[in-house]
Amino acid sequence: MSSPDALHDDAAYQALRAHDARFDGRLFIGVTSTGIYCRPVCRVKPPRRENCRFFPNAAQAETQGFRPCLRCRPELAPGLSLADSSDVLADQAARWLAQAAHEGQDPPLPAIAARLGVTDRHLRRIFARRHGVTPLAWLTTQRLLLAKQLLTDTALPVTQVALSTGFGSLRRFNAAFAERYRLSPSALRREGAAEPGALRLAWRPPYDLDGLLGFTARRAVPGQEQVDGQVLRRTLAVPHQGQVLTGWIEARFLPQRCELHLAAAPGLRPALGALLQRARHAFDLDADPAVIDPVLASVPGPARPGLRLPGSWDGFETAVRVVLGQQVSVAAARTLCQRLVQRFGAPIDTPFPGLDRLFPSAAVLAAADPADIGTLGIVRQRVRALQALAQAVAAGRLTLQPGDDVAATLATLTSLPGIGDWSAQLIALRTLGWPDAWPAADIALLKALGQTAATRDPAAGTAIAEAWRPWRGYAVFKLWLSLETP
Image 1 (cartoon, rainbow, N blue to C red):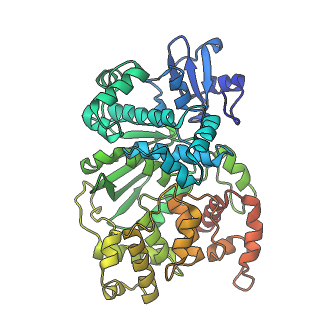
Image 2: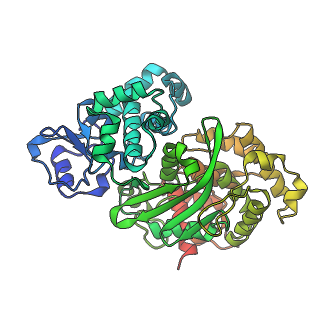
Image 3: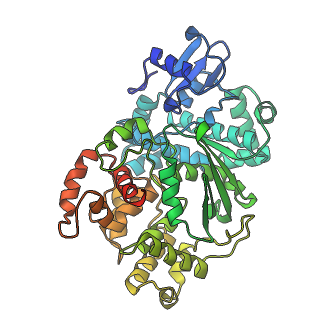
């Protein structure tokens, strides 16, 4: 393996023999006797050591001529976390390329380089050093693995799969499959598909499912979101190729398999690739507990192995929820949000009783009469903040999605009336997935750190939190949970 933080080959082989899920997504094994590459969790009989080649990512395995295993399915593996390399720029570019593949886009590399503040040539150089392949090879692998998942887990027509994964034409799609996998998409569907059903996503254990779902359940808005045991259901609107698709999703956790199964309404299926990315962000599936947990060990409160950040299905919705939560209890914020959804959210049909409303769009709230919002019990200052936020999102000045520039997003947010550092930090934590967010003046945070109303000192709390960089956002969540759960 060529990655600077890669396992030694002997250790990699032991991870394979142990089916160690902690290395899922960070280790792939090419088997020279079959020409197949696998995840370390693959349940087939381990190949002989001399027949194994080890790679830090799927793209390297494919560029060396290996085809993905139809049994363990490399497309299900967790992706890069923010801690996978000190080469942050190369990893960020890789995440953006993966996001583009899942959204069916064809991003020009110069635009990605400009977004990162480097030249195209420099990005190619650091990308190859970090990942061992070119950005184009990485993008092609992401597209093909997504296509493989859609062919295996759905009944989408092959042509729609080709267009959804950004190939542009069926001819290009078939040619890429023939070159990489040495079979046609229709043949792969026949050979590798089970009965089409929910899309599967994997995570690296451990996973604090009780913490994440408990947090979500206490904030679930009736009519729009439900948590039932280890199943989450919600309504969702997704922009896709110039239109807005609406429907419902159901996320079912299977802890014993380290998997999430995601089902979606027929109306959302053209955007399945984007939904997979949203699910990974919403449930923090790409986090690496082996890196994060040791840092959190000194955070006060009960140990929570595999702590995950509650992300976001829709950045605007999450930002609105943060604003509504200013200076009120969790229960009060949930009530205000429910009123907003019932008053301004569009009705929608779902097969789940009680799930019948979409969250209102930024355009709808931006155009609403402030007096109408005020009748819901939302104070005037908060109404002003909500509408300023809605106008910024509707105008495209804020996108509130993973990969956005943190500093620029914080600056734009704090320039809006009624949104200070507390709100901006929490919005960045949940919508951008910024792991080092720290809302220094958060009352619950300071209480969990042992401060009382009389001794409240945000600067002292911030000084304590220096030991938890770059995972202060995870520390925030752990401290909150220490107060919310017995």
